[in-house]
Image: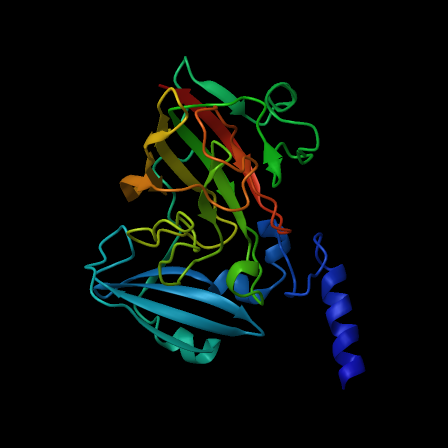
Length: 300
């Protein structure tokens, strides 16, 4: 039986463009994911005075999280959600009378102001001009994880769009992990946290500083947005910090951090200390295929 299981797993891996990892199959396009029947069932459902997020867990198992009033950021009353797990026959029966919805961020495709720095718009010219050697771009014009900008910044407004892989059998920090490091120092987490509780290490969390006010994660393989207003830490002439960095973060158009003070930098960035020096935009490589597009910064 074990040998047959290994053969089936190898065959499944060959069906995907991305190789299987230790965490199971990894899909980076909707077309690939469509080979898994569970992908079409995962998603958001609304109706009957509630919203339900259905999360694929692999092997035809699911988690269904029910939010009173509607989905997070779209009707949810804030009352405690309830969650159940089971096979589709059990989960699907609880969706009767509900309609599946495919939400889009209201800032998806947001165009930069005329005086913004367009770090990446899918063209070779912006890729070559703004990203350090070692950064990679796909044949379809998407930026890949592990990207560090040549440009450095102080105070700014950032717009960025990102797409997380579908990894139904992966769990925790191994499920589509990356991070958006402001100034190469402060991480706003990127992770497939769809249907999970908020935490500082889940999507939208500012690691070691604060969990998001609400989990606004969309299902994996949905394009999502971060819109971030960042104010750099301030230092006196002797190099002593006199004011912490601050950030307001919108995830998929909803404010999840409002003028949040960032008392220290985050581990894992490309800059190891807080100083008055400007810093780059760093998109972390955590060994998962994450994609980015439409990245621009307006300095203040």
